[in-house]
Every structure is written in C-alpha cells, then in structure tokens.
Amino acid sequence: MRFNALLERYQKTVRVSMFGHTHTDIFQQQFSVNSMQPYFNYGTQLPIGTTSVCGSLTTWGGLNPSYCVYTLDKETLLPVERKTFSFNIADANASGTPAWTLFTDWLVDYEMPDLSPSSYYAFAQRLQTDENLAAFYKMKYSRQPTQGSCDEGCRQHLYCDMAYFDPYANRECKGDAIFDWTGNWLGSVRQALLEPWLKPIEPASK
Image 1 (cartoon, rainbow, N blue to C red):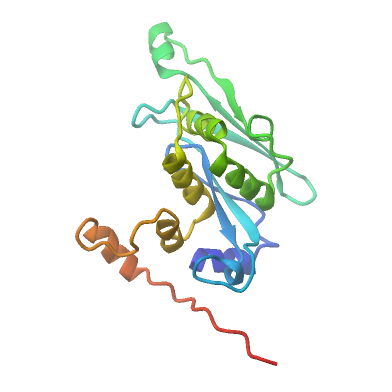
Image 2 (cartoon, one colour):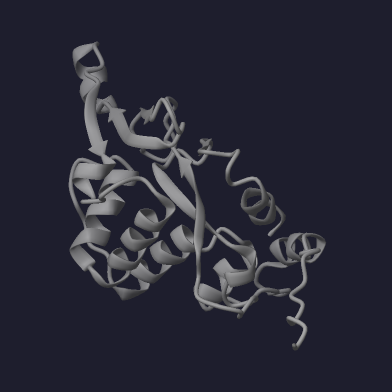
C-alpha cells in the first residue's frame, strides 16, 4: 500500500517501473489508493501505474533465459514498446550457441493498443475470462515452447497476480485468508508486520 501511495503522489515523475528477480515476464497493476478494492470503496478502480517485471538471464525452474527491451517516448519518457528476447537453453547446449530471438512483443502478441496502465488492466480483465489467452500468456511469461491449458481457477490466480499488487487485496482476490496461522504462519507473521499504515477515511459530509 505504501508503494501505491508513493506512485500515485509522484505519478507525473515516475514514468515507468521496471523490476526483475521473479524470472517470469509479467506485470503488476497499481491503482489510485482511494479507488482500490476491496479495502477502499470510494469509486471504481483507477489504474495509475504498472510495474513491468522481466525475466532473467539466469535459469530457474526450467525457465529459459531472457531479457527485455523497452522503448520510451523521447518527450514524455513513457514506454511505447516492450519486447522480450529469449533462447531455448536445451537447443543452445546441443549446438553450443544460443540463438536469441524475439519471443514476446507485448503490443502485438497481447493485442494491446499501448502500454498505458489502463491498457494493461484491460488485458488483465480479458485474460480473466479468455482461457486461450490465459494459456498463451502462461506460455509466454514462462517462455515455454508449447502452450498448455488454464482453467477458471488458473485464470483467477493470474488475474489476481496482475491486478492486485497489494498483498492483502491479492490474497482476498484469490479467496485466501489474509492470516492463515496454521497453513502459512510465516506468511501471516509477515502480513501482520506489514499492516498498512494507510487507512480509509470517510469523506466529510457537506
């Protein structure tokens, strides 16, 4: 929640957020704090930022190496292209040479009009109900050679991970208990320590 608040306050300064570490090629949405659901109920969700998370050059869990190239508009410094390049490590080991190729063009492959926060959120909403798109996205973000399946539960988890950066809202979106002291006591301790310091305040009546 703190990160969301900072991004909202400085959204005209922070033009793009890029991270790594997860090894997957994904994104996470940020919303205006006053419009966040389910903890803030003062309006519809207003996308104000997107965290782009690229894959990694290192392998982990069977994921092929990758790197991302972002193109920014010179005047606004807003992202206008996002492309992911990868190679098949099994083929590279067999041939002795990695063959880097364009694996994902976000605008083309996901049929996004642009890389605005609203377009990312619209994509997340489409994916929630489109099984083929969800399975295609799973193949792309994990850089697998073939497309699998993604049932309703799978699509809901993907949607929650895209749309709810806040851990409390993410768990509620997935139908998980925020505090699970028997099944996930360590995570529950972390959640308790990260209790948001931002609290909703009802607008004063006129």
